[in-house]
Image (tube, protein in one colour):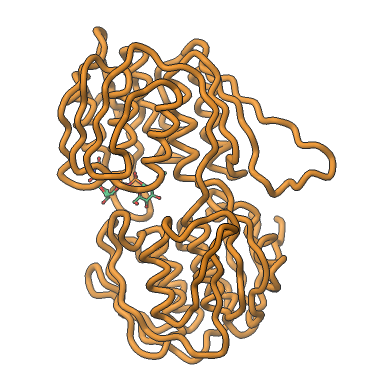
Length: 429
Ligand code: UD1
C-alpha cells in the first residue's frame, strides 16, 4: 500500500489548479443512466472514486470512454468522458460494488425512473457514522415507487412509471436531493422538493439535467420545482470546480505560511470556510483567475466553527480546519453537526503532538507551539488529508499510511503540493 512521506516546515508558494469536483462528478455520471444518448462530461477529475463508479455503471450497461490526450498535453487537466447507456442490461447493483462507495447507491433513482425496477445493495456502515438511506427511499416512495428491503437490498418498483409529488426532507440531505431530482425529472407531472440541499453540486446536477431536457427550477435554493418530461437526451457538461479540494489547499497554506493561487475556483463556493481562515490569520483575495490565500509571519488565532449544510462550514473541511487549529494561539471549539463520529482524525493528530479533547459533538483544540512528525494512519478521505496538512507544519518526518483514502478524492495531491514547495513524496508499495 502506498504511503506519503512529508518533511514539514516548508512554506507553500505558487499556483494550484483546482480539479473538477468529485461530489459533482459522481451524480453527473449517474445521471447518464437516464438517457439512451451520450452524456459528455468535461473536467472530470482523475480519482479512484470516478474509476470505481465507471466500473459500476459499466455493469448496468453504460459504455464509458475517455478522450485521449495528445503528447505534451498537461496530464493534470481534467479528462473528458463520454457515457452512453444505450440499453440498461442490469438493474441491480451488488453489495461488493456499492459497499466500496456510498454514492453508488444513488443509481437506484435513474434505474427505477427509466426501467421501472431497481435492486441496489444497501451501502452499509461507514467510518464516519451510520449514514442511512431512509430519506432517499422516502423520496422515491413519494414519487410512487414501491420499496422493499430484501436480503440487504433496496428493491424499488414502479412498473407504471413515477408520478410527480411533493417531497419535504425533514433533514437536509445532499444524496436525497440528487436522488429526488433525478427520479422526478422524467416522472409524470410536477414535483416540489422542500428543504432541499443547497450545495453547489446540487445546482450543477440540475444544470446538466436541464441541458438533457429536464425542467428543473430553483436548484441551489431550498425549494426545487421540477416539471416532469417524457424523455431526456444527451448533453455536454463541464464539472464545476472542487470546493473541498480548494478549501483543503487554502487551509494548507494558512498552516504553512506562503502564498497560493487556487486556480479556477470562486470565493462564492467557499464563503464560510474562507471567513474562518481569515479570522485565523490568513489573507484571502480573489480575481477572475481564482482565489489567492496568503499568510505571512503572523501567528494563527483560534477560531470556533460548527459544520452545517451549504452555505455553512462544510463537514468535508472540518478535519482540515482542526489540523490548522492545532497550531493556533488559544482554544478552538469545533462542532460537527452533520455526521456523528467524524472525529477519527483526532487520535492521529494527537500522535503528532496535538492537544484535542472530545466532548460529544465538539472537539476542543488547545493550540500547541509545535507538532512533531510521526507515522500516522488515514481513516477516511477528509481525515487523511488533515494529517497531510499537519505533517506539512510538523518538525521532522511524517508518514501517512493507507493513502488509498486520499486517492479516492484528491487528484495528484503530492504533485500539486510538491510543485509549490512542499517536501512530500509518495512511497510505492
Ligand atoms: C454528501 C457528500 C459528502 C458530504 C455530505 C454532507 C457526495 C458524494 N458526498 O454525502 O462528501 O460530507 O454530502 O455535505 O456528494 N441522512 C439520513 N438519511 C438519509 C440520508 C442522509 O439521516 O437517507 C443524514 C446523514 O446521516 C447525515 C445527513 O443526513 O447526518 C447529511 O447526509 P447527506 O447530505 O445525505 O450526505 P451524502 O449525500 O451521503
